[in-house]
Length: 346
Image 1 (cartoon, rainbow, N blue to C red):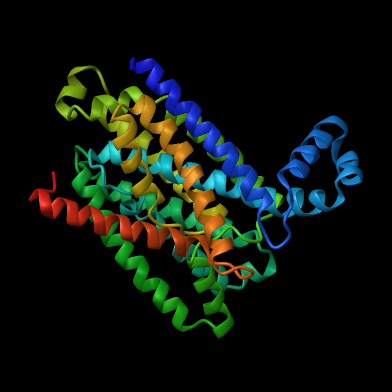
Image 2 (image 1 turned 90 degrees about the vertical axis):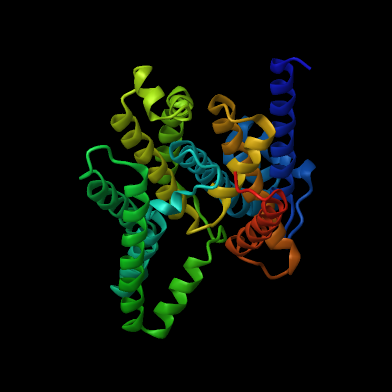
Protein backbone atom coordinates (compact mmCIF):
# COMPACT_ATOMS: atom_id res chain seq x y z
CA UNK A 1 0.00 0.00 0.00
CA UNK A 2 1.44 3.45 -0.91
CA UNK A 3 2.70 5.58 1.96
CA UNK A 4 0.13 8.38 1.56
CA UNK A 5 -2.75 5.89 1.50
CA UNK A 6 -1.45 4.22 4.67
CA UNK A 7 -1.34 7.60 6.41
CA UNK A 8 -4.87 8.43 5.23
CA UNK A 9 -6.20 5.09 6.51
CA UNK A 10 -4.47 5.60 9.87
CA UNK A 11 -5.84 9.12 10.15
CA UNK A 12 -9.40 8.11 9.23
CA UNK A 13 -9.36 5.18 11.67
CA UNK A 14 -7.98 7.37 14.48
CA UNK A 15 -10.53 10.14 13.93
CA UNK A 16 -13.45 7.68 13.79
CA UNK A 17 -12.18 5.97 16.94
CA UNK A 18 -11.97 9.32 18.72
CA UNK A 19 -15.48 10.39 17.62
CA UNK A 20 -17.05 7.09 18.69
CA UNK A 21 -15.27 7.11 22.05
CA UNK A 22 -16.17 10.77 22.62
CA UNK A 23 -19.89 10.09 22.11
CA UNK A 24 -19.72 6.99 24.32
CA UNK A 25 -17.94 9.06 26.99
CA UNK A 26 -20.75 11.62 26.98
CA UNK A 27 -23.42 8.92 26.98
CA UNK A 28 -22.18 6.63 29.75
CA UNK A 29 -22.64 7.38 33.44
CA UNK A 30 -24.93 7.15 36.44
CA UNK A 31 -27.57 8.76 34.21
CA UNK A 32 -27.55 7.16 30.77
CA UNK A 33 -28.01 9.64 27.92
CA UNK A 34 -28.73 8.01 24.53
CA UNK A 35 -26.33 9.03 21.77
CA UNK A 36 -29.30 10.13 19.65
CA UNK A 37 -30.26 12.62 22.40
CA UNK A 38 -26.65 13.89 22.51
CA UNK A 39 -26.62 14.47 18.74
CA UNK A 40 -30.02 16.22 18.97
CA UNK A 41 -28.65 18.34 21.82
CA UNK A 42 -25.64 19.49 19.80
CA UNK A 43 -27.86 20.23 16.80
CA UNK A 44 -30.23 22.33 18.93
CA UNK A 45 -27.32 24.12 20.59
CA UNK A 46 -25.66 25.12 17.31
CA UNK A 47 -28.98 26.15 15.74
CA UNK A 48 -30.60 28.08 18.59
CA UNK A 49 -28.06 28.29 21.40
CA UNK A 50 -28.28 27.08 25.00
CA UNK A 51 -31.93 28.17 25.43
CA UNK A 52 -33.19 25.95 22.59
CA UNK A 53 -30.99 23.07 23.77
CA UNK A 54 -32.38 23.37 27.29
CA UNK A 55 -35.95 23.46 25.94
CA UNK A 56 -35.64 20.46 23.61
CA UNK A 57 -33.26 18.29 25.68
CA UNK A 58 -33.44 19.43 29.32
CA UNK A 59 -31.87 16.32 30.87
CA UNK A 60 -29.12 15.98 28.28
CA UNK A 61 -28.40 19.69 28.49
CA UNK A 62 -27.95 19.59 32.27
CA UNK A 63 -25.83 16.43 32.35
CA UNK A 64 -23.81 16.69 29.14
CA UNK A 65 -23.16 20.42 28.73
CA UNK A 66 -22.35 21.17 32.36
CA UNK A 67 -20.84 17.94 33.73
CA UNK A 68 -19.59 15.48 31.10
CA UNK A 69 -18.53 17.82 28.31
CA UNK A 70 -16.14 19.87 30.52
CA UNK A 71 -14.70 16.60 31.81
CA UNK A 72 -14.26 15.32 28.25
CA UNK A 73 -12.56 18.56 27.21
CA UNK A 74 -10.25 18.27 30.22
CA UNK A 75 -9.31 14.75 29.05
CA UNK A 76 -8.67 16.06 25.53
CA UNK A 77 -6.43 18.87 26.78
CA UNK A 78 -4.52 16.78 29.32
CA UNK A 79 -4.13 13.62 27.21
CA UNK A 80 -3.09 15.45 24.06
CA UNK A 81 -0.61 17.76 25.79
CA UNK A 82 1.01 14.97 27.85
CA UNK A 83 1.49 12.70 24.82
CA UNK A 84 2.80 15.58 22.70
CA UNK A 85 5.24 16.62 25.44
CA UNK A 86 6.37 13.02 25.75
CA UNK A 87 7.01 12.68 22.01
CA UNK A 88 8.99 15.94 22.08
CA UNK A 89 11.06 14.83 25.08
CA UNK A 90 11.82 11.44 23.53
CA UNK A 91 12.94 13.12 20.33
CA UNK A 92 15.05 15.62 22.25
CA UNK A 93 16.74 12.93 24.37
CA UNK A 94 16.91 10.50 21.42
CA UNK A 95 15.48 7.86 23.75
CA UNK A 96 12.06 6.24 23.08
CA UNK A 97 11.60 5.63 26.82
CA UNK A 98 12.28 9.19 27.98
CA UNK A 99 9.61 11.16 29.85
CA UNK A 100 8.92 14.82 30.71
CA UNK A 101 9.21 13.82 34.38
CA UNK A 102 13.02 13.72 34.09
CA UNK A 103 12.95 17.53 33.77
CA UNK A 104 11.59 17.83 37.32
CA UNK A 105 8.26 19.26 36.20
CA UNK A 106 6.17 16.84 38.28
CA UNK A 107 8.29 17.46 41.38
CA UNK A 108 7.87 21.22 40.99
CA UNK A 109 4.13 20.93 40.51
CA UNK A 110 3.76 18.67 43.56
CA UNK A 111 5.71 21.13 45.71
CA UNK A 112 3.50 23.95 44.42
CA UNK A 113 0.39 21.94 45.28
CA UNK A 114 1.59 21.31 48.84
CA UNK A 115 2.46 24.99 49.22
CA UNK A 116 -1.03 26.04 48.07
CA UNK A 117 -2.70 23.57 50.43
CA UNK A 118 -0.57 24.25 53.53
CA UNK A 119 -0.80 28.05 53.17
CA UNK A 120 -4.58 27.83 52.77
CA UNK A 121 -4.78 29.37 49.29
CA UNK A 122 -6.44 26.27 47.83
CA UNK A 123 -9.30 26.60 50.34
CA UNK A 124 -9.80 30.30 49.61
CA UNK A 125 -10.40 29.62 45.92
CA UNK A 126 -10.09 26.29 44.04
CA UNK A 127 -8.32 28.10 41.17
CA UNK A 128 -5.26 28.74 43.36
CA UNK A 129 -4.26 25.07 43.32
CA UNK A 130 -3.70 24.76 39.54
CA UNK A 131 -2.01 28.20 39.53
CA UNK A 132 0.46 27.13 42.24
CA UNK A 133 1.15 23.80 40.50
CA UNK A 134 1.82 25.57 37.19
CA UNK A 135 4.17 28.12 38.75
CA UNK A 136 5.97 25.33 40.63
CA UNK A 137 6.44 23.26 37.47
CA UNK A 138 7.73 26.18 35.41
CA UNK A 139 10.03 27.40 38.20
CA UNK A 140 11.54 23.93 38.64
CA UNK A 141 12.17 23.58 34.89
CA UNK A 142 13.75 27.06 34.76
CA UNK A 143 16.10 26.29 37.67
CA UNK A 144 17.09 22.96 36.10
CA UNK A 145 17.90 24.54 32.76
CA UNK A 146 19.83 27.45 34.32
CA UNK A 147 21.95 25.09 36.41
CA UNK A 148 22.54 22.70 33.53
CA UNK A 149 23.33 25.51 31.06
CA UNK A 150 26.41 26.49 33.06
CA UNK A 151 28.05 23.76 31.02
CA UNK A 152 28.93 25.19 27.64
CA UNK A 153 27.05 22.65 25.53
CA UNK A 154 24.07 22.13 27.84
CA UNK A 155 24.34 18.37 27.37
CA UNK A 156 21.31 16.21 27.98
CA UNK A 157 23.24 14.32 30.69
CA UNK A 158 23.54 17.51 32.76
CA UNK A 159 19.82 18.21 32.36
CA UNK A 160 18.92 14.71 33.56
CA UNK A 161 21.28 14.79 36.55
CA UNK A 162 20.12 18.27 37.55
CA UNK A 163 16.49 17.21 37.19
CA UNK A 164 17.04 14.19 39.43
CA UNK A 165 18.87 16.28 42.03
CA UNK A 166 16.19 18.99 42.15
CA UNK A 167 13.40 16.38 42.21
CA UNK A 168 15.01 14.79 45.27
CA UNK A 169 15.39 18.19 46.95
CA UNK A 170 11.79 19.21 46.25
CA UNK A 171 10.56 15.79 47.37
CA UNK A 172 12.23 16.28 50.75
CA UNK A 173 10.82 19.80 51.07
CA UNK A 174 7.36 18.50 50.17
CA UNK A 175 7.51 15.84 52.87
CA UNK A 176 8.67 18.46 55.38
CA UNK A 177 5.68 20.69 54.58
CA UNK A 178 3.28 17.75 54.86
CA UNK A 179 4.58 17.01 58.36
CA UNK A 180 3.31 20.44 59.41
CA UNK A 181 -0.02 20.05 57.58
CA UNK A 182 -3.36 19.22 59.13
CA UNK A 183 -5.09 15.91 58.44
CA UNK A 184 -7.58 17.39 55.98
CA UNK A 185 -4.73 19.18 54.14
CA UNK A 186 -2.83 15.92 53.74
CA UNK A 187 -6.01 14.27 52.46
CA UNK A 188 -6.46 16.98 49.85
CA UNK A 189 -2.89 16.57 48.61
CA UNK A 190 -3.20 12.77 48.41
CA UNK A 191 -6.47 13.17 46.49
CA UNK A 192 -4.87 15.66 44.08
CA UNK A 193 -1.73 13.52 43.61
CA UNK A 194 -3.82 10.63 42.27
CA UNK A 195 -4.68 12.66 39.16
CA UNK A 196 -8.26 12.91 37.98
CA UNK A 197 -10.83 14.62 35.77
CA UNK A 198 -13.86 14.53 38.05
CA UNK A 199 -15.51 17.83 38.96
CA UNK A 200 -13.93 19.81 36.14
CA UNK A 201 -15.77 23.00 35.13
CA UNK A 202 -15.50 25.34 32.16
CA UNK A 203 -13.87 28.03 34.32
CA UNK A 204 -11.02 25.67 35.25
CA UNK A 205 -10.25 25.08 31.56
CA UNK A 206 -10.44 28.68 30.35
CA UNK A 207 -6.84 29.70 31.00
CA UNK A 208 -4.90 26.42 30.37
CA UNK A 209 -6.72 25.71 27.08
CA UNK A 210 -5.36 28.66 25.01
CA UNK A 211 -1.81 28.00 26.22
CA UNK A 212 -2.06 24.31 25.31
CA UNK A 213 -3.46 25.09 21.84
CA UNK A 214 -0.81 27.74 21.03
CA UNK A 215 2.15 25.73 22.36
CA UNK A 216 0.95 22.56 20.60
CA UNK A 217 0.71 24.45 17.29
CA UNK A 218 4.24 25.86 17.78
CA UNK A 219 5.63 22.44 18.68
CA UNK A 220 4.10 20.83 15.59
CA UNK A 221 6.19 23.27 13.53
CA UNK A 222 9.41 21.85 15.03
CA UNK A 223 9.16 18.44 13.34
CA UNK A 224 12.14 19.12 11.08
CA UNK A 225 14.31 20.17 14.04
CA UNK A 226 13.43 16.96 15.91
CA UNK A 227 14.22 14.90 12.80
CA UNK A 228 17.62 16.58 12.54
CA UNK A 229 18.36 16.02 16.23
CA UNK A 230 17.63 12.32 15.69
CA UNK A 231 20.65 12.23 13.35
CA UNK A 232 22.98 13.38 16.15
CA UNK A 233 24.14 16.80 17.28
CA UNK A 234 27.11 16.99 14.92
CA UNK A 235 25.02 16.13 11.86
CA UNK A 236 22.24 18.49 12.95
CA UNK A 237 24.74 21.32 13.46
CA UNK A 238 26.31 20.57 10.08
CA UNK A 239 22.89 20.97 8.48
CA UNK A 240 22.46 24.45 9.96
CA UNK A 241 20.51 23.75 13.14
CA UNK A 242 21.23 25.93 16.18
CA UNK A 243 21.47 23.15 18.77
CA UNK A 244 21.35 25.24 21.95
CA UNK A 245 18.50 27.49 20.79
CA UNK A 246 16.47 24.55 19.48
CA UNK A 247 16.98 22.53 22.67
CA UNK A 248 15.87 25.44 24.84
CA UNK A 249 12.78 25.96 22.67
CA UNK A 250 11.81 22.29 22.77
CA UNK A 251 12.39 22.09 26.53
CA UNK A 252 10.19 25.14 27.02
CA UNK A 253 7.40 23.67 24.89
CA UNK A 254 7.42 20.27 26.62
CA UNK A 255 7.56 21.91 30.05
CA UNK A 256 4.64 24.24 29.31
CA UNK A 257 2.50 21.40 27.97
CA UNK A 258 3.26 19.20 30.98
CA UNK A 259 2.60 22.04 33.43
CA UNK A 260 -0.73 22.89 31.79
CA UNK A 261 -1.83 19.26 31.79
CA UNK A 262 -1.06 19.07 35.52
CA UNK A 263 -3.08 22.24 36.03
CA UNK A 264 -6.03 20.61 34.22
CA UNK A 265 -5.95 17.08 35.64
CA UNK A 266 -3.23 16.77 38.26
CA UNK A 267 -0.21 14.47 37.82
CA UNK A 268 -1.23 11.64 35.47
CA UNK A 269 1.58 9.20 34.82
CA UNK A 270 2.75 7.13 31.88
CA UNK A 271 0.84 8.91 29.07
CA UNK A 272 3.84 11.01 28.04
CA UNK A 273 6.05 7.95 28.20
CA UNK A 274 3.93 5.10 26.86
CA UNK A 275 1.72 6.64 24.16
CA UNK A 276 4.52 8.09 21.93
CA UNK A 277 6.42 4.81 22.27
CA UNK A 278 3.41 2.84 21.06
CA UNK A 279 2.59 5.31 18.29
CA UNK A 280 6.19 5.13 17.05
CA UNK A 281 5.72 1.40 16.51
CA UNK A 282 2.66 2.12 14.34
CA UNK A 283 3.55 5.20 12.28
CA UNK A 284 7.35 5.18 12.46
CA UNK A 285 9.90 7.64 13.89
CA UNK A 286 9.29 10.57 11.52
CA UNK A 287 8.07 13.44 13.68
CA UNK A 288 5.72 14.85 11.03
CA UNK A 289 3.51 11.83 11.78
CA UNK A 290 4.67 10.96 15.28
CA UNK A 291 3.71 14.27 16.94
CA UNK A 292 0.09 14.64 15.70
CA UNK A 293 -0.68 10.94 16.08
CA UNK A 294 0.79 10.95 19.60
CA UNK A 295 -1.47 13.85 20.56
CA UNK A 296 -4.55 12.14 19.08
CA UNK A 297 -3.84 8.78 20.70
CA UNK A 298 -3.03 10.49 24.00
CA UNK A 299 -6.56 11.92 23.92
CA UNK A 300 -8.06 8.53 23.01
CA UNK A 301 -6.09 6.74 25.72
CA UNK A 302 -7.06 9.17 28.49
CA UNK A 303 -10.74 9.17 27.46
CA UNK A 304 -10.75 5.36 27.45
CA UNK A 305 -9.00 5.15 30.85
CA UNK A 306 -11.40 7.63 32.46
CA UNK A 307 -14.38 5.79 30.97
CA UNK A 308 -12.98 2.55 32.38
CA UNK A 309 -12.54 4.17 35.79
CA UNK A 310 -16.19 5.29 35.77
CA UNK A 311 -17.43 1.82 34.76
CA UNK A 312 -15.25 -0.67 36.64
CA UNK A 313 -16.69 -0.05 40.14
CA UNK A 314 -19.87 1.85 39.16
CA UNK A 315 -21.61 3.75 40.68
CA UNK A 316 -18.32 4.70 42.35
CA UNK A 317 -15.30 5.88 40.36
CA UNK A 318 -11.59 5.12 40.18
CA UNK A 319 -9.31 8.11 39.61
CA UNK A 320 -7.95 8.08 36.08
CA UNK A 321 -4.39 8.42 37.37
CA UNK A 322 -4.74 5.01 39.05
CA UNK A 323 -5.92 3.44 35.78
CA UNK A 324 -3.08 4.92 33.69
CA UNK A 325 -0.47 3.88 36.27
CA UNK A 326 -1.77 0.31 36.34
CA UNK A 327 -1.88 0.01 32.53
CA UNK A 328 1.50 1.72 32.15
CA UNK A 329 3.10 -0.53 34.76
CA UNK A 330 1.78 -3.68 33.06
CA UNK A 331 2.97 -2.43 29.68
CA UNK A 332 6.52 -1.80 30.84
CA UNK A 333 6.74 -5.11 32.67
CA UNK A 334 5.84 -6.74 29.36
CA UNK A 335 8.41 -4.54 27.63
CA UNK A 336 11.14 -5.56 30.09
CA UNK A 337 10.33 -9.25 29.54
CA UNK A 338 10.52 -8.69 25.79
CA UNK A 339 13.91 -6.98 26.08
CA UNK A 340 15.20 -9.76 28.32
CA UNK A 341 14.23 -12.36 25.74
CA UNK A 342 16.02 -10.36 23.06
CA UNK A 343 19.03 -10.02 25.33
CA UNK A 344 19.35 -6.31 24.55
CA UNK A 345 17.81 -2.98 25.56
CA UNK A 346 18.50 -1.43 22.18
